[in-house]
Length: 196
Image (cartoon, rainbow, N blue to C red):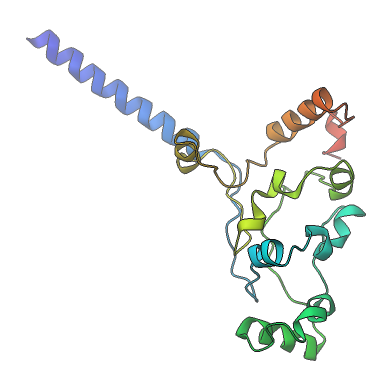
């Protein structure tokens, strides 16, 4: 009888140890970018799905620069002088236009300072924005949930699509290797391409 109790107690200790290890592994993830409060609510889903705007219509610097860039207030007002001008969020936009001030957007996607990520070669190579940013065309608020998380694992387990992929070095290197193997790309694999 004592042996059964000892085995049961040992089993509980091992189970508790496994749970602690699993939780600590989920705790070691890259910085999580979440939906930041923005000065104006910008529904990507409406602009992309309803009005069929391409990402690069607003983020024109993506194809020629390191950064994707944000559109000037003048570009937004090109449509919104007329379209939905009576809505509160568009009225906020009009205030920026009247004051001739840029919108102070809060950054959502960011790689570590020691990492160099240029948008230009990725856009020119045909990498879709959703590859790194997740299903942004479905988002009412731009956000990213990166890294291994219990929620992502459970969504994968039941067959649903989790949010944006983990923006880690290993993930990027795996993508480069896959592109080189499957599409004949020449995505660099040397350290100085991203760290210099």
